Length: 301
Image (cartoon, rainbow, N blue to C red; front, side, top):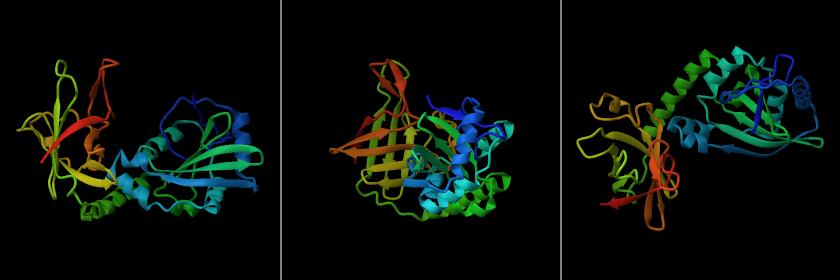
């Protein structure tokens, strides 16, 4: 299991954000890693940007990820040198809470210093992780405004406001996008695979300019969707939160907000499948309901 080292002030951590995990402290390791970041013979290779996590979380974040210009080797080296150490306390926890939860957006790279190799993971919210060959990961925060333009957002309440402005700006772009739905028009019907226990059915109706998801039979809560097509996959996101006022059952989506990811429809070998992080499907082998399972869907015109 990967260890996350949130280093005390004298230890090695540069301001970055990610999910909260158990913290173990190692002053010797942190000081060693921190000194490595200052070396001039650092080689950065295989730089890539990954938007898949954002794509299956929120369409706003996904568009921010696509627009984030990938960093080059010289920019990454400057960011590494300017990173600040975290203290491993409540301040770091607050910073992580207000940043990583907002940005599932990453640039990754391989880093070599002499004979030592590292994995680098930079978040669009101004922090990064460095993992050594012993699979120990250190966290760094990037608070220097000089490098603020290298990220999507910085750290702090002002940057929370900026994030909301970026979302609003992206909303206008998203609404102006026209997705060709000719090949996807129709009605998709599927269920949770268990007629004897907590049976539920689902329906997706796609027309030229409309996409609706609902559970059970009509009348039901109809959730309007934003669609985004990628090759043979059609991604569906919540268009508005009007559904929260519905008198019908919305328990399976009640925790979601505008722009959040609902599911994707997959076209393969002239068949259609639905895969979703919110819809459970019965696994006969494990005798449990599981999410993110490909469910074959009946499609009718």
